Image 1 (cartoon, rainbow over the protein chains, first blue to last red):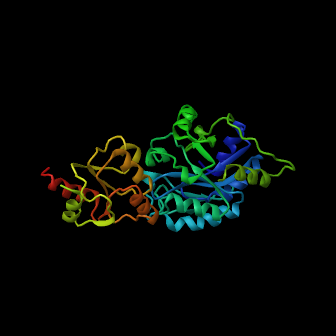
Image 2 (image 1 turned 60 degrees about the horizontal axis):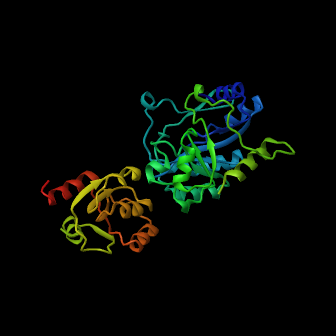
Image 3 (image 1 turned 30 degrees about the vertical axis):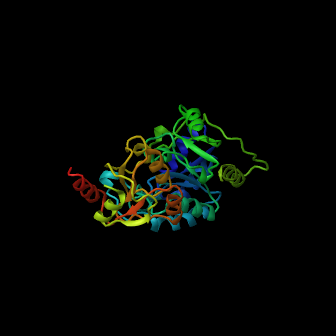
Length: 220
Length: 110
């Protein structure tokens, strides 16, 4: 998966807005912006952040600059283990034409040393939106790890892997949140069709406005 | 054996101790709270590296005798305050989970 072929596949699927959320990294977001712009897709820069509790949080930013500044804060907080490409795959940073710029040496799938509270605070200091990822999944979902989505976190949004158990989980947890169903695609074939929608006011239309409205909608 | 005796014999650091005379009847180890809440037994000494504030809720729910945080995992002050408020015995040790469980087991002649 590269930024250019992700954008190309998303275009074929008819997606109009697309977020790149690599594990603990935003470093391919500059290339992702270029690739999405070429296909007329609104790019949203972000990260799937792993907290100290091994919980995955989706983090999205209104601008590339905020995302990259956040990335610089996160990178030194990743538990320092070197990637082994034969096990975990290559961690490439590329440009908008998929040319290799650098290879990320730190294993990105690892946890950071930020607990959920600290992670939320840091995301919001950089102007982003944060919500728990795939809360319906047994691995790295907040409910699996903490037993609940604690009310204290005041999340406005939650993400599901699919909506099969959404109503039951929302009722059990007493959650009144915006629910997102994201493909969480780790290969091109798993990028969802355009079947989930959010209503965003987009006049006068610009990609930056759509991103800003999206973050406003999803943030706490 | 009481929680206080267990604490003394394992040389545990006290983070909160509201009920030192509570009887310890066994042990449990685990970090996934959704897993622990359905399996830890009333009276267990629960050993974990998880320190999110939800550990206090899980200890309440499962009625464990105490929580022992392993490997000196960092515990935020609000979690300690919550333990005191909910009268949950909360201790900490530099030992890892395996070593702690071996020690707990030896106290019960396991």
